[in-house]
Image (cartoon, rainbow, N blue to C red):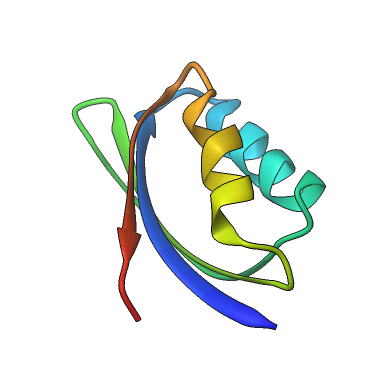
Length: 76
């Protein structure tokens, strides 16, 4: 399995993190590590995920989400 890291900025709303995690799970990725910090109603999330699939499948779906404003890939 490949391990990927990315950061994500999203609007801080009660349901946002749940929706993000649901997309990650439905795309066949496992969350290995998650760190969330909030500032000025923006959630800064650092994810480490594992999967046999390519990360682009997940990033394309996350970028379509209304509350997600930015996704940055972290080079390993």
